[in-house]
Amino acid sequence: MNKQSGKTRRWASLALATTGALSLLFLAACSSMGAASTNGSPQASGSQLWSQNCSRCHNFRSPSEFSDAEWDMALAHMRVRANLTGEEYRSIREFLEASN
Amino acid sequence: MRNKTGTAALLAAAVLAAPLVEAQDNPSSQSSEGQEVTGEDIDYLQQRIDEISALLNTVKPGKRRFLLTGYGFGGFENAEGDNSSFFAGFNPIFLWTPTDRILFEAEVELELEDSGTNTALEYAQLSYVLSDEVILGVGKFLNPANVFQERLHPAWINKLPDKPLAFSSKRIQASTQLGVQVHGAVPVGSTKMNYAVYVSNGPTLATDAPGSFGQLKFKDFEDGNNSKAVGGRIGVFLAPELEVGASLEETSNVTPDASAVADAEALIYSFDVNYTGSVPGGTLDGRAQWIFSDVDDVTFDPSGSVGFGPRKLDNSRDGGYVQVAYRPSDSQSPILSKLEGVARYDSVNLPAGAPEGGDESRVTFGVNFWSTASSVFKVAYQIDNQDGAPDSDAVMFEWALGF
Image (cartoon, rainbow over all chains, first blue to last red; front, side, top):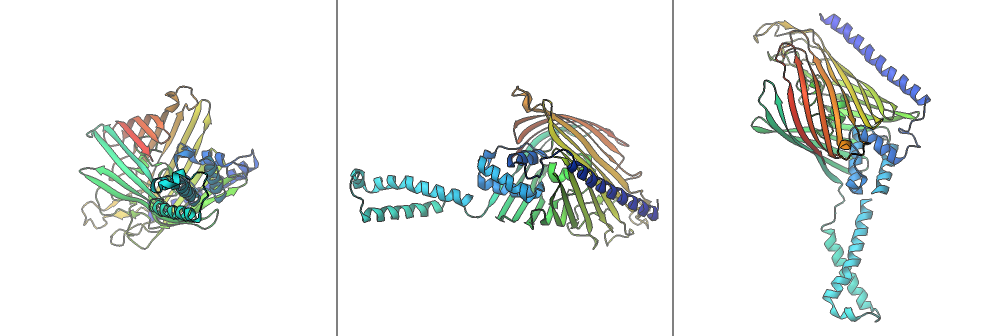
């Protein structure tokens, strides 16, 4: 395959990726019009957000496993790693402080 | 929060300790019950409190917010065609948050390899929270385009003892990036979307090694040219339990400046689906990620001076994995509720004539026992299928602990 056909294939790949990304946005929009979800919404409690976001990757640990100060840092780490919104971060932090 | 706790502890200790010290140092006060408290008594008490406060200040936690966390693991692998061997590793993670907006995080990988200890800086990233939805990161960071590597690779999280081929022995997507990224999450209606955009050194094309030409090398710590990789990922939660994502990375030239091989553009894109939710009797965890790597078809060793050329590849690769795990966590049995069954299919397809061999696919079955939320003992059997090479079925054990 020559370089020109490689370019063609590359643009086709880009188009595919763009289509995929737009499809995801469309699906998200459809999803948001459907049944109520708790993820990231104001009504989602700190405990819900904590269990949902933790369990997406690993088992969630007991709030008593770390001190408040340790949770502060672990949660800052998870905010970056799990892409928590600021609102989710604050809700989970309040929940952990209250539970610890 | 910590200061409040520290102050409370300090006062409690002082109040509790003062009478004891007073009783020890000033026996006359033992019979002072009912007597009038003089200014001299108060001065003495204040002096003792000051002394105890000073003493406690030498041992109480400082104002620096630092946490050591991480994971460790050890195990055994017996694969056909290789000597069986034990293995072990230790990955400490250092977290430092000088303010609520700044986080420094670094992971060091210490792993036994051959006759020595392999030490690597897995990541070292400085993050600044610009707003509720935007975080700026600089340094060496886990590749946000690679969900497995960014979120699931630690041994105590990965549900099998080894990693999928596309992220290990036949890697086609970077595990980390060295550069700068902007990432975060944005509420979208009643759900949310997360995103990441980055610029990094990007991969380098192997051009002169007879055993690896055509491969992308991702440890580009000193960039081989001035062309940077630009990439990103979008993930959308269709429900709290279900996330779908797509990523794209483009590097206009991956050929090192010093090479005689022509400039080549590389495009890597991937799709992922992640589900974790409750199902009858327990919890279901489903993952899928597939990566496509496309590099310009250039001629390697064009003059034949290296000794293996001229060679040309249709340099497209793809690979990934699909994994399902079920844990009967609702079971009344204390043993059964801690068991988890796992099945994974992973595969990498290589271009014809690739020097590293042919396509490879594997099916792996495993059973895990979770003694605690972060301690898992894994047993797995792997069925391997390689083109042009003997299959290498394997039995693996691993115990991993997150801390």
